[in-house]
Amino acid sequence: MKELVCIVCPKGCRLRVDEENGYLVSGNSCIRGAEYGKNEILNPTRVLTSTVKMEGGLYRRCPVKTNKAIPKAKLFDVMETLNGITLSSPVSVGQVVVENVCDTGADVITTKAL
Figure 1 (tube, rainbow, N blue to C red):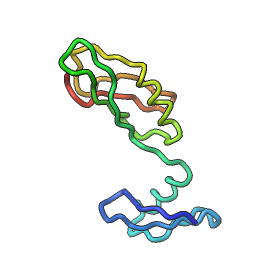
Figure 2 (tube, rainbow, N blue to C red):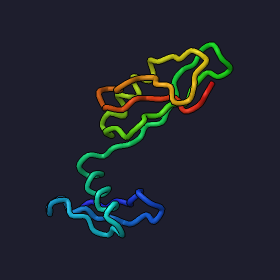
Figure 3 (cartoon, rainbow, N blue to C red):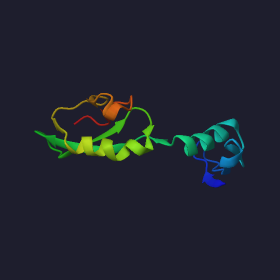
């Protein structure tokens, strides 16, 4: 049995996921908590936030993020990809930096105009 804290809402329900019983989730207050608990065990995902190098402007780094959650197992691969990227100023908010990064189906986008 795995124990998790649900992050879907501010309540922070203490979930228990029974892996031996079809990933049955208990301790949740809502259906979203049950879905979160099962997904967190079977296929954990995260939205990645980071920075990439900048040149030609006032700032050396530009904040970026994935436009949707990616598999947790791919986080280090995506970070390695971002380490090799340098943007040139100017940059607008929402500008795509990498499409379908590491075959995750997510794009890396800028989060600040610089």
